[in-house]
Image (cartoon, rainbow, N blue to C red; front, side, top):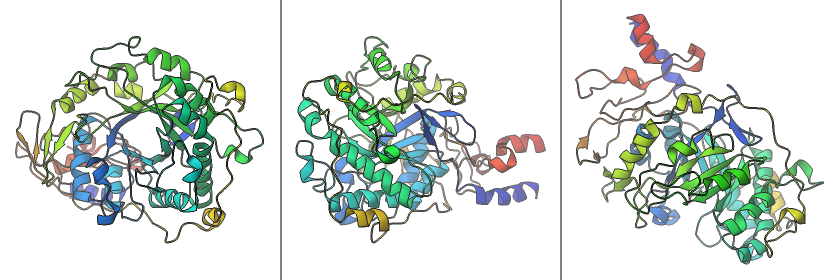
Length: 477
């Protein structure tokens, strides 16, 4: 009866696994604990570009069973954040968002897509910055703003990859950031970081960072200033080092940043299979004072050969060698120490926007931004119509239903997402992946040794002093 009562009491708590984070200075901070958050991320775009298919009602977060499958596998790795590209704001994402939330994983969402009219044109951005484009980006905000595990939005991804694009695109990227932040201010119940994901092209990287993080004098609330800056970097290949990879120059470049910096993609795949020796450095003392972690590219195998899992046409999964190698590298990190650093409170004052910040000849050094397109003010004030609504929902069954094979081709049975307690983000070890899944948030199932595994899948909420069910059982018996 004691166990049954405890489980019933916990049933209502599993919907809020992670607290909303704040961007303070150059850190992401848990406002409840004042702990600095390091992103242990995964790029997630099931089906690649073809996985985004609005005409058939499909995007990477539209299938709950697939999300359970992948959230459980990423829980085993120790992932605490997913980056999701190419989303349709008109689809319902409640189940997937709630699954990743229960698994202790945040979401970083790109507001653009490769389709015409759904992203900025790098060389002629004025031709793509119009009301219907902005209406779609605002709709993405509406669809995701109410999920507590939303970490932030990217207003652009690699829009600038050379100096020529750097001459045209920066004011428009900054304008989109302004417009998104204004929409969030008007319609969301909390501040949500908005930033830019840059290509690691050294000719334009530092200028891009300075252009987006600087403060425009006289701008009301500094709404166009990015809240975070990230880069897609593949400079650490094979068994490189802090110096040979150029990570040292990046740390030196960003050490004065006034916003959080992180890798929005990393994981060079030459040679293959990858050995991920950069993990220890990214989460070591040389980088964590400057960088807020990174996002491994990518979960699902595509023709570009960056995947950790091979997804079959029947949605079955065969884990690849890179999955195990990454897991092994993560297991070497002292995550308790990494994730328990307290916020320093020493916010770096952003530089004032000035032509002198821009070093590369030809890169735009004018900080006069384009005005809102016609009809956009009404959307900003009244909201998009029809308005997508996202909310956390109860997930009654966390079991993975698709066939899964490990790196050696052996079947993994009874795999399930293990819901975490309030204020808990995922970390290595929260789910051992050894067939000890729970069928629901308050039920139980049999694992390989015939013992009930359901009781191990829930953690008591913060209201119960953060004690895990396992610790509760140990104390009770």
